[in-house]
Each structure stands twice: as C-alpha cells, then as structure tokens.
Length: 434
Image (cartoon, rainbow, N blue to C red; front, side, top):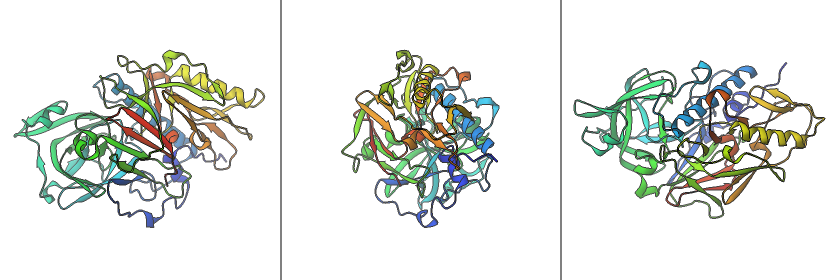
C-alpha cells in the first residue's frame, strides 16, 4: 500500500486530524493584524469533505502549480490573454491562503483569498450567476454601498471597463473563468481598521472554476490594490507569516502597515517590471547547496523587464520552481552531496527522492544583500511512513517556455516576509508563525 505523501500545505490537512482546533477559528482580530488561514485548514469552510488518493494529490499539486506558473508568466510578459490551464485540467487557481474581511454597513464577513500577484479585490455579490456556492455579499443590506460612475477616475483604471446605465462595468478573464459585474465602493474593515469607499469588483456573472469562492484581496502594487487604496493608512507596507503544515493549527498572520514590523530583519531590493508592476521581483544572484555555490548560468537568474525573466516571490504557488538550467544545476549538486551510491527515485513531479535515510545538505537562496538558509522543512517533503524523502523544489514546466523563477509559499513558511514598497525592499526573518 503506497504511503500517503504530505506534499504541501494544501494536501497535508487532508490526511491529518485536528490541525486547527475549533476554539481558534473565531479569533477577535485587533488593530491591523489579520489571521491567515490555509484554505484547507479545519477553520476553513472550503476544506474538502473527503480525502484524496496519493496519486490524485500529486496530480492536483502539479496542475495547480503549473497553472499558477503560466498565470505568473503571462503577467510577467505583460500579456492580457486569459490564463490557460496546464494539461487541460480545470483546477482551482485561487491562492492558498485566506483572510477575513468585513464588507459594508452593517458589516458582512467574507473569507478573501490573499494574493501578492494580483491587484484588485473581487467579491461575488448576491444573485451572481455562476459564482461558487458560498457566502456572497449583499449590496442591498449595506447602507454605504454604491456603484462607481463611468466618469470616475477608478473606472479608467479598470482594464476593459464599459458603461452600463451610468455605472462602470467590467467583463474580464481570470484563469478559466470570465467575470463580469460593476465596479463598486463600500466600507471594508480589515482587523479593526475601517476603510471607507474601498473600490472593488462586485461580481454579477461568472463562468469557469477559477474564481475564489468568496472573493480575492489583491496585495500587488497596482492602482486598485489594497496598498494603493490604503496608502495613507498602511503606507504601502505589509508582512505575512505562513505556518508550517506540521503546525498544530494552520493560522498565520497578515500585518498591515509599518507598525509592529520586525526590527531585526534582512533586506533585499524589490525590482519592478514596468510591463507588470504588480509582481514582486527580487534579485536572486545565486543558490548554495551546503557550502558550495552552484554553477548556474547568469542568464537563468537575470532580471529582464522586456522578457519578464527574473525571480518573483509569490504567495499562491506551493513549491519553488526554477527555470531549467538553474534547477538542473541545483538538483545535480544536491544529488552529488547525497553520494553516488545512493539510489535516486522520482515521485509525482519530484525527480530527486530517496527511500533510505540520508544526510541532507542545507540550501541557501542568495539574494542581493542577504542570504536565506532554509530549514529542512522548507525544502524537503516526507511520506507519512517516513520511507520517502524528496527535494521539494522543481523545474518550471517545460511546456510553458518559462523564464520566471518563483519563490513559493512552502519555502516561505515560518518566515516573516515584509513588503516595504516605499523603500523598494523585501525583508525576511525567521519566525514561528503559529
């Protein structure tokens, strides 16, 4: 009988019990700090009711990340086309983590997907045709709700906006979904901070399977993002801490604004792609396996805003993916350190696995101005029986012609990741997030 593999934060919860005690699900959030939940934690209404087989969990993981990578690649290159699904599988592309937000007056609570590579907020409204069967926002129950007019500045910031009856409307693609509705405004409360007149998409029609069940909160750098709309309140600064899947509960935190951010933290420069300013590019200059700096072609790591190549940090991808030349160099050095007589096996999308006890070297990401040495929990996955250990970093799918390296959420877990946009820097500090 094949051992079930704890392949990711998303799937670990499917195979364990009591990862988030019910007593921790209703937390009184204070100030500008929000609880971050994994979508499959026991505190999440989106957790599947049944388990999946080991084989299907691997397929889901591969499909989700491949679809996400193609989505990020389209953003990096500035393409406006819909996001295709890898291998034709209609998998949910919604981000992995959710936060509570209260919309309207009186407030209505929704769980919004947290996404560092998107800008605007999208919320399914009552009566939405084709939206997921989950909680929807009811505009008629809010005394502060209003539609954005066609002549408003916010309407001109919305791609492909149109005018219907004097209201700003949109019809756009998101993954395999089409999303249509009105650009709207209402009070949004995050923690205990009320933000009046927040602009978001009130979704009235949707097709496909890509839309997050209760909506999306964009943490990118675009003009309709949370950072842009709350600049005077949060100073375009936020951080998050994503817990390990081995944690007794899957709750992390999203901290908005400069107050309370760690003082002892290492920084690297944030880079901008003018074609897609929302993505958080960083300058990855090298990778060490053990004490050896791996021989990676400089072109595999170089930032090029014209082609979109370089390295981004993303909250929605599960496993770090490196372009082929970079991954092969890291993988080969990792295998060399394991010893030539050690048998290498594969498991799903991972091609560097071992079925015997091994002594594992460290892996260090070398960014401009800082090095981040990962604990083993951030780059190894194990079967529940402990019989298989795999390197949880992979090559970008070869069918995507990818030029983008993505630092993903498993490699970020149990770190405080600080986005200091005014100073164009990204901070990283070790922190137990649960």
